[in-house]
Amino acid sequence: MQMRINIPPLTRVLLALLLAISVTHQITRYIFEGLDQGFLAIIPQWSLFYPWVYLTATFAEQNVVTLFVAGATILYGGKYLERAWSSTEFGKFVLLVTVLPNVAATLIYVLWFAITRNESRALAYIQGSVALQGAFLVAFKQLIPEHTVTILKGIVKIRVKHFPAIFLAANTISGFVLGTDTALVLGWAGFFTSWIYLRFYKEQSDLSGTATGGPKIKGDASETFAFAYFWPDVVQGPIAAVSDKIYKALVVVHILKPFSAEEVETGNVQATARGEGGLPSLLNQSRRGGGGKREEAERRRALALKALDQRLQAATANKPQLGAAAPTNAQEPSASNKAAPADHSET
Picture 1 (cartoon, rainbow, N blue to C red):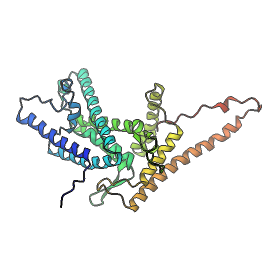
Picture 2 (cartoon, rainbow, N blue to C red):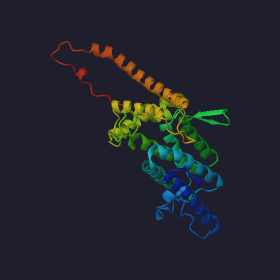
Picture 3 (cartoon, rainbow, N blue to C red):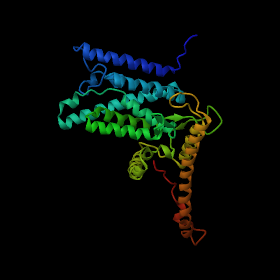
Picture 4 (cartoon, one colour):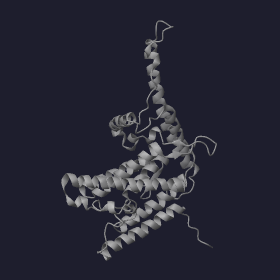
């Protein structure tokens, strides 16, 4: 019987690239020391002469442990996302979250060198799949936020929506304590690149209707995918206040287009539909059983109903104010009846 390889095509290509580039990088770095060490990994001082390194550096791992972690990330994450999005959309996503974080990290290290005049910053190695790992976790937060991952035979249970914050906290602490500053920079850069793309730019099919091949929806305006919802409840308020101001400033200068109330509602429906649609599970890539799918759908529905209830309460509270401000002359409408349409904030 012929063995069937159950890995989507682009994921197979990425795994092959990871192995080939990592092995080649180690050969050029340790066996043939005379060869240019910045040929596959980013060295800020030299990377402009080798522009392809902004792509290859992501697949140039430093040791066997990081190679294994990168391989697992691409195998399981790639299988899931490629099947959920299609090979074309997954390819666009991978290209963005590998190249842009590497470019951003290079600029940060060049600026770091310019400020401190510390030559080690200009000669630092920027490489590895940390940005890709952070980007994948953001995508999982969008697609299966309420999915529970069980570790150590059920002793530890973590929902997928908490992984990005845990990942960033671990890399931040490690960067300051252990000196792994490149992982810190790449982790945050991958997180922001992924979230901005998925939140505002990536096109997705309408999962709430029954028709296929209909118009695409740009971005994800759902309230549960707002920036503040990536963090613990205790800090969501302050983060939401700051992120709202940044979002409104970007809207004012026309960098971002504001979400309408209809787009937010559609985003919430999309989030619920993803939970009800039975996307493949994170590890076995098969369709989830009915129980797990129903639980996740109920959690999503509860979040959407909570957000709707808050908006209805706010609308009800505003009605007495509008009634009190009604004009005494029916033929002359007052300015209070000419209110501008509400501008929905990012969070």
